[in-house]
Every structure is written in structure tokens, then in C-alpha cells.
Length: 304
Image (cartoon, rainbow, N blue to C red; front, side, top):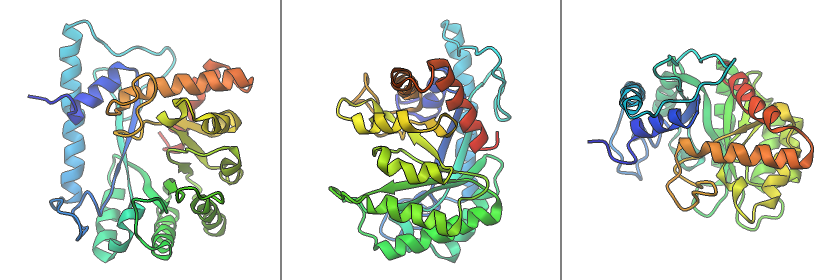
């Protein structure tokens, strides 16, 4: 019997909520069991991809059961289905693959081989989450993080793939050092021609600016809806319409009005509404323009 947080059920609920594209990260260190400090079982890239395939298939079956109860995904006039979707399962499930800053010390030849295998899969649409994490939960030396970030950025250039960045500054770092160093490395190596997404942006317009100037897409999650997140909302209003997307960062940071719950993809609708309202109030785009851009920008970023 499916649990309430079963991946297939979460995918089905997202489809019912109107989500049409779901991109999840796979980490060749953490998810393939290559981290010597973790007791995660070893799983091959093929096994991880098969897991996603199965979750997508079961989610389609669940939608059939939901339909019998009168619950069906909404239809969006003029919005075509993506390549990995069907009328019976209108949500396209994809993934990105990359070594998170937490796992940077384990990035060796075996890890790179598994990562390249993941990146060659049909469902894969990018390299990520990669980047820098100077937050309180990561003890990896900055030099190690920067080296692995650079190597994966170069891999994205080589393979013609976009990158998804995870960037977290140290607590109370007024200089936003991780963001500054990430922007500097992007400027030095070059943003991959396929694109770059700054995942889960939680800072203000000043930190946002260098990434916008580099042409990056910026993803806003549930934190944008929190009462004390005026700086994030200011950044969302300042972000160019052609460079904004939204996400859940599940299972973390569920948006208002479901804050405190375990976050899941279906909840992205609340964040999208918040972004549309913020930009409408700022007079920079109408809600319809924001919704259309969230969709079109994501499709363009992942070449779908």
C-alpha cells in the first residue's frame, strides 16, 4: 500500500495540481552510495533511473484511479504536452545529475563515471545540483568545493547541458561570499551555452544582480511566501521576466498556506501564485505574463 509520501503518489498529486514538468536531482555520491561517511546502500545509475521510470508509471495508474473519483488534471488551452508526457500522464518527469557540495570530497574517477552514465540518460536534462555551500551543515573545505564545482561546470560545457546551482552563504555573512565566488567562477569559466539555473534563491536583489547579468535563470521556492521574506520577494520582482522560474525544493520549505507540512511538488502552485502577485503589485508583469514565463523559461532552460 502506498504511503502518504510515496514518490509515485507525490507525482500523481502534482499532476492533479496542474504541474506539467518535474525535475528532480540525482547525486552520484549520495544516491549511488559512494559517500564513505554515509550508510546509504549502493545503487547503480540504471537502478536509480528505473526507480524514476517506475514512479512515473505508477503515478499514471494512480491518475486513472483518481479519475474514477472525479479528480482529473486540469487542461491548459494552447499548452502542448512535453515529450515525456501523455494525455493519461500529462506530467513530464526529468532529472539533473551532479555532486552536491556536501559530497565534493568523494568526487573521484568512479564517481565521475557514474555521473556521466546518469547524464547520458534520456530523462536527464542537466548537471546539478552543483555549487558552493558554506552553511552550518557542511564541513567541506571551500577549496575542495570550488574545485569540484569547476570540474562539473566544465563537464556541462563539454556535454552541452545546463547547470543547476546550489549556493548557500555562511550564516550572517554580509558579503554573501558563496554567491560572490559562484558568480566569479561562472564569469571565469563561462555560463554553459545551454543555460544556468540558480536553485532555491533566498537572498535579495543585490545578490541576485550578478547572476541576472550573466544570463542565469533564477528559481524561487516556498521561502518567497514566508512573512519575513520581503528581500526574496523584492528579488522576485526585480528578476527579468525571461529569467524567472519556480520550484518546491521538496521536502523542504513548504509555502504558505501549508508551511510546516512536508513540501511536495503539488505545492508549487502556491509559490507560483505568490510570484505572480508580487510582480503584479510591483507593476513589472501581469499574472498571466508571469505564469506563461514560468512555464516557457523552464522549457527553454531544459530544452523541452
